[in-house]
Image 1: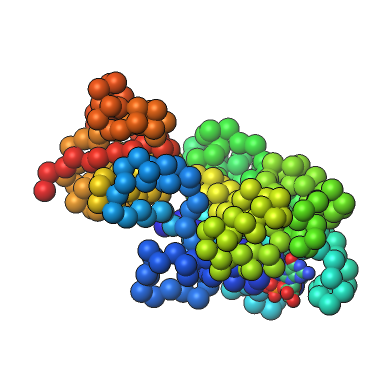
Image 2: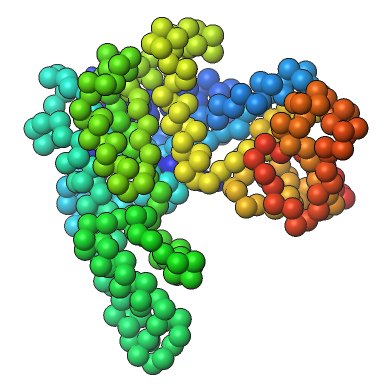
Length: 365
Ligand code: GDP
């Protein structure tokens, strides 16, 4: 399954946030994973549609879908040269599908900053530069080989050389691959490179508890937002400390706490949702009297592939998917009424599933 890695310099609040994630996940009793990697935190994906479907269908149980974060510790300046835990750090980043970079945006005399003062842009650039340097090394290794093949008129090599050169130029100018523009053709080649700065990234601004209620005075946050918008990345504001406190609360207590802070949603929930989007994930539902359940799939997956997420047999013996869009179902008020209104579709093998589809898979056993 896809996972988002959490990175950041020391003392920015990573462990605090990751603690919040594991504590929240521990409440998610539906996921009794046998062997959990201590660096992996599993959280439920908040989705109000699941509550609505539960009211509509009144099932015996309701099961949300889950999502994984991986804690990637150990970034320091010089990581790309293998300093400190550098190599290990880069290897871990290679394994994740998206990156959440925690950035310190709070003042606290009691918490030392690795470089002596709080400077979020400097912090971001330390990390991004290490990743850029690591990518440059990969590109420099590959480019001469490809250039050689290109000289022999190998068409694919000629195309690849052009893309690699473009990437090299970008990296040398300090630009991550995700910020460069590629044609569809170029994009095909880029995907094979598996470069670190190609992974989608979002920034997690860790602000103080007090700032949460009024962010307008936080200059660090403004700087982070400006930086992120230049590369088209999103910024999620959290207070890791607050998240750690509310992670252990029951839903209604949590809502009260958030209301007092003037927030409609916890920072963690925002982060989960944003990471989900960043990874190109979507949700479909199964809704029966036994259980109403949300399932995660990757956008672009076909109906049989989505059936395979529930059980491989569902994919092997797939016949069709009886599908109704969530909005149509809710508007109709019941599956029967949705059927009468002609809103339930019979979809075949080629059907590309949509976010919010409520389905029954039909299959041969
Ligand atoms: P890491 O090294 O990035 O994992 O950072 P930690 O999560 O260990 O946090 C470093 C220190 O900063 C700890 O003493 C935390 O209690 C403190 N800290 C983390 N988040 C916040 C926050 O939102 N506000 C304040 N005041 N302190 C925080």
